[in-house]
Image 1 (cartoon, rainbow over the protein chains, first blue to last red):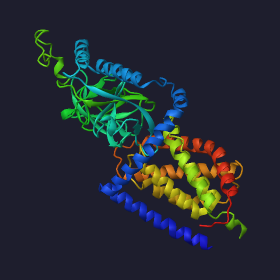
Image 2: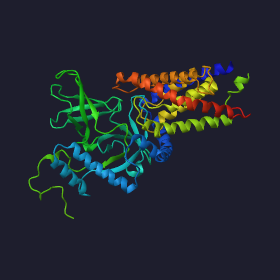
Image 3: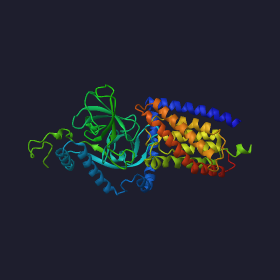
Image 4: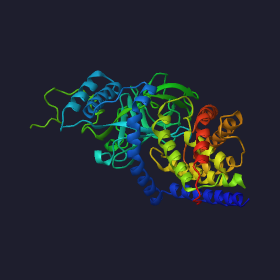
Length: 293
Length: 177
């Protein structure tokens, strides 16, 4: 009986502690943030090690690419980036010049840190987050864009020395400035917690959209948190009629959000934004970004 | 009296609790959540918490629930509000601790209890998350998540709960905490 009353007191006390933690976290308390950072630096390396050991099993289950060496990973990430550039841009010339930009080391182009996913968050709370095995020691900072071979995946929200946590674009708290490929209409793409469905609201609801329209990232100043021109997904359905102010288009993410493995963190933007590169250059020899060396 | 003594938390049992919960936490985020199964992710940590509550009663269950929940809230890749899972797991484990079932073998009653409590826990986390930050929740997805959660938890309970029962009751010692 004594046990029972102790349990009752305990559960009420712990409930109050939880409520206090929730309040502190919502107010952005540094103490909770510090606790989170501390837990991350302790648990992160353990997750990396276990994930590496469990990788064959997980890969088999996901039927994705197998484990590779470090330079192999770098090569994969570069190829992925080029593919991203190719799929998200509107014409071939653009992707070719972007590819050229990528190859011009020291002049411009995205620099990408490759990383592997080591942990996934539960989907029960309509969240979407992953931990990757690269951290502040690999020059990763918060608000950097994270991409996979198919498009934008999310942004870095927390960094420990050896791991980082990424908020996926499918997280119910995520909102990405987006535009329609081709018509260039701007809108906001929100996550819904589902790994295969996001909702898009255009600034101008009278614009005509159709299923299959591609959605790409609008881009933020300095490319943080989101770099411009990255593939986000394709429209698969609608809620509401054209012209209705609260019309929503449902978007299927370009990347396989529930089975991510190799990703790249964009640590440096191209000096010239990919959007500007769409203008055909007046002559091939007069590229302004080219520096003699 | 013997029943109460049989459930008390001793040092070896504390070690069992810490090792089992820590393993479940790591397996949860590095393997189970990555399988990409339809609907919910198989909630091993929830099942383990309920398992300890069934085996060790409300007092130990509440402590395990709060600790495991807080760890899930804090460890990467969690980005939700800290305290939500801790509070939910503590309360769910408190009530699960009052249920009397045979936890040494996987019978229908035990599996049903674990599945039921894990669905309650999932629903509570969804609602608490909804009130503490998450904005664009797709409500139509909830029934599917709860149904799959019940199925996954039943499967996990068959193996996990008898194992917890065996380890916890086996690890006896006179050093009471």
